[in-house]
Image (cartoon, rainbow, N blue to C red):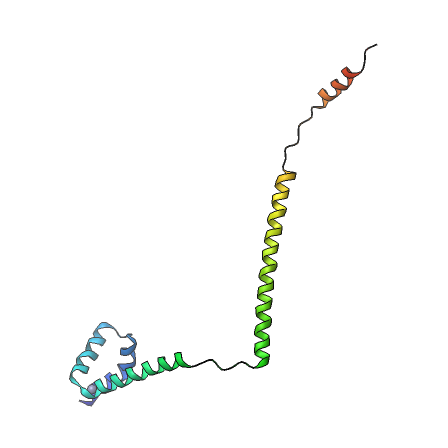
Length: 127
Ligand SMILES: [Zn+2]
């Protein structure tokens, strides 16, 4: 009867992660229903996993050294300044595009050269 216990013990981490196929999970479930030792081991592994998750949330990040804090401040300042720079660049490009569209894109009145010559000729007083 040791052999099924060994197999189930090997499968317990995958069982707890929910990574077993349906048939294998059913096999482990059936064995856990019968075997008190494996059930106790499963409960212990579950508690350990919960404790580890709890500890990882409780752990505070280590304090930063002055050099690291200064570096992080520089990076944050650089990010803020580069963000402002690109914002100003976008505004400048938008203003330039608006000005080009407003002033350059106006239709130029067509001048008929023959008509303008005729006007000049007709404007001269006849003798
Ligand atoms: Zn067992």
